[in-house]
Image 1 (cartoon, helix red, strand yellow):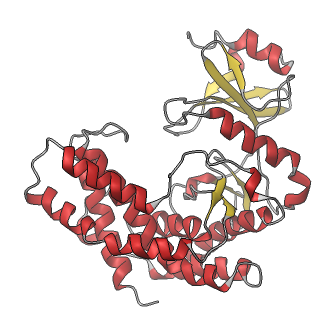
Image 2 (cartoon, rainbow, N blue to C red):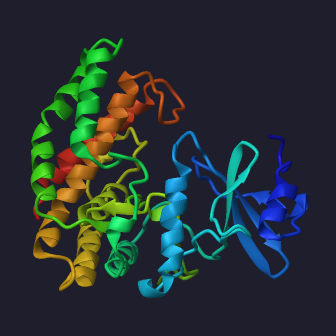
Length: 343
């Protein structure tokens, strides 16, 4: 589809009169094509949906429409910019072979990394409050967006399959990483144990720091965004991904191995926020599971990076041939640091 050739049909679906010159590329996301649209006093985010990553967009639309229906019950202390419905009553609009959606734009600061523990606390508090808000809803009504997305047992089995089928020699650094992640099978057993104890809640499942919009002074969270992966899950998933992406001293693409560690002050701030928000609401077992979450989410990401490397780099975007191998090593170093952490 030519750039913006979809616009006449999109305008009809939303009763808008947008022009090409109002639409500009926006953000640095790797999943959807995202644009900012300025329409007089109103500003919107327009996205062309990536069907290659999310194979069943109607499931995301179903979950979002449920959230819109129950918005008054969420009682959130920040904005929650769900897609707006079109004239047909749907949040996802089919235009020829593509899907589009439009959301309100929230002005503020989107961070790529946290500089202070206080910011880590605010981030974790916001994601914990989102889980808490979902406590008012029937989680069974929501559907799983990506089956097995955060299933550690499934990801371990996928790693075994990748090892069995790879054409890459299992030697040297590759063997070191394969041996390390295979030796973490015990975490799969812990995962299955926690699953048997914990309630399923409505969780964000992608709690990276750039999925929040902060106020200009960085003293509050104005909005939680990137809502595609909201679905039934476990509290430790959201906490664990915060640990993996916020409390690590290096980003997941860093190859400065000796500098990859856990920032204990940020870790403690993340943990305290979940305790403060969840006390009396989350079960004691859920609170006890949080420390497992950091290790679990780091391990599952390592499984996935290593599997992708062994499979020929077919999922994650790479800039050089060994990047997924190095990403897996990065996660190995972080997991080792988490395992040494005194909690």
